[in-house]
Amino acid sequence: MPNRLNPIAKVKLFDLMDGMSKERIKNLIERHLPEAGLVETALKGVQMFRVTEAMPCVPAVYQPTVVAILNGTKEAVLDGEHHVYGSDKYLLCPMTLPVEAGTPQASTEDPLIGVVITLDPRLMRELAIEIETVAGGTTRSQASSASALALADWDDGFTQALLRLLELLDSPVAAAVLGPGRLREIYYAVLTGGAGAAARRAFGVGNEIARTIEYLSNHLRDQVTIDDMAGHVGMSRAVFHRRFREATTMSPIQFVKSMRLNNAAMMIAEGKTVSEAAWDVGYQSASQFSREFRRMYGQSPRQWSQTAQLPDQLN
Image 1 (tube, rainbow, N blue to C red):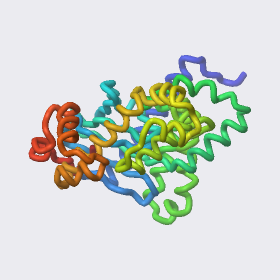
Image 2 (cartoon, rainbow, N blue to C red):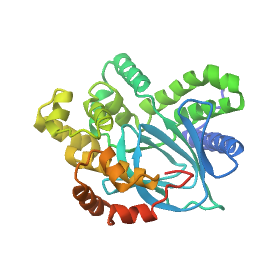
Image 3 (cartoon, rainbow, N blue to C red):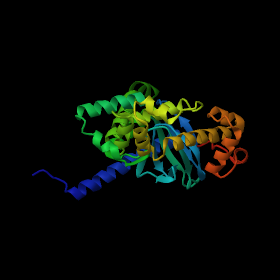
């Protein structure tokens, strides 16, 4: 008779193997990044980070990314909703979003350690549509309940794909030759895992809102109206407004304002003058910019410029 494990034993064995794989990933990152910082790797779009000091949440703009934490906790705030996550879950940001982000508990003794993978929208769209086509459209109905920021459990597919990807860092040749294929595995794991609904809504059939946000991100300086946005994706104003709020939790006007102010806050923190930052994100009135900035962040742009410092480690 074959020796079969009972269901409880199988779960315990899976948890043990999953923990071992995560520990290997953590060791890989620590070996390649022994000091605090945020570094690009030889793999396109893959960054590793180590943060050794607590930082409050500050304005940021997330691009389509996956963030996986191996030690410590990180926080992202979208429209007042706090997403705090550690090594038990990974974060998917499926579209460009104005957030506040920080590392509230990082320290030298207990650093925040992790990896950021910037998603290629073209490849994600190709994979999402291919998955939907092969599945006969059965995955689309799940996407209607997806949230703008998604937290997902580390399933075996994601854990093993990430481990296989980062193992390539020990060989520049392997990273160059095998890297694109391993990244495709990560994308597939995200699209079919716990964050798959949010990913498919942003990149699969019916991704009009994500395409609108991509358009907005490239036209922040322009005076884009709701009618312009709705027309860009062929929707009526009313349908577009409803779909946009469902996807982002914000109205289109609120979203545009947050995108502009967060980008401006980041520019000021990086050294641009208040007037330069305001102009670069589409404000034509300095007084309106100052008024909306104070309402959003509780201080004037000039006060922000005197106190804000973007950390060298991670936003």
